[in-house]
Amino acid sequence: MKLLRVGPVGQEKPAILDDKGTIRDLSRHVSDFAGPSVGFEALNAIRAIDLSTLPVIENPDRIGACLASVPNFYCIGLNYAKHAAEAGMDAPKEPIIFSKASSALSGPFDPVIIPRQSTKTDWEVELGVVIGKAASYVSEADALSYVAGYCTVNDVSERAFQIEKGGQWIKGKSAPSFGPVGPYLVTADEVPDPQNLSLSLSLNGATVQDSNTSDMIFGVAEIVSYMSQFMMLLPGDIIATGTPSGVGMGMKPQRFLVEGDVMELEVEGLGRQWQQATNAQ
Image (cartoon, rainbow, N blue to C red; front, side, top):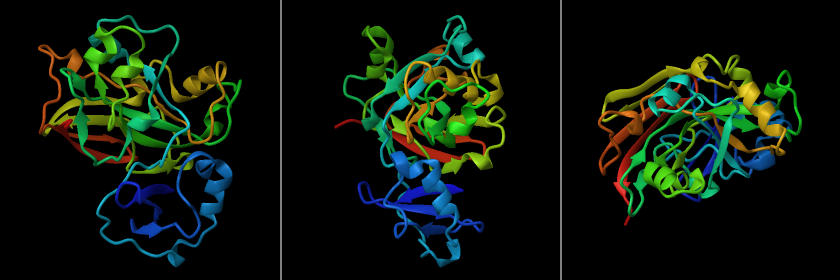
């Protein structure tokens, strides 16, 4: 299934794509997509619905984030071998885990807002993993059975805030609009191998990131299992699993977002995003 949310900010309706690509309104059956409502029991209830009975949503004016909110927005750092190399850092021996503020959550076509005082706002296309049931001390062999679905994520980052101001990375990752997710939450049954998905990002029409999840140092199953040894993952949690090479910080000379820049990004089978950068007011 491909689940999405359509409508103005704060007024989104839960929806689903039928087998013809038509958007169908799920709001009579589902209040929204967040937390337990993207757990396995809720997803199975949606599967049982005859989609032909649902109202059609034609020409929606906006597609919002595929999740209305998240209990936790986790990220994995330096998880592609070539990205670690371009950052001048050794490949990590264990997954590097950090968080984005949940308030960074944004729609896939909403503007990316360059924060006040920012000099180094950067782009990062990533595979997003959405948890479908509570996960604690799970084995790597069982880990994918805890995944409800996947989505495209742009882990927008302010590198000066992240690296030059000391402390934790979260403050460079968490400005409003720094977490575009969607357009779809694609259920796990439609992604047979999360370690063989192409992903790419273009800036003003020029491709800057072009890779495959096979370049991950730690795969999805290993990440979910590893994280569950230290915390309980909850239904609706999202994990951005790292970005490939081609970020602005790794360019020579470095290149960061300025007002008017356009990013287009995609993860194979999960949908395409489009964002234009704008300065904070």
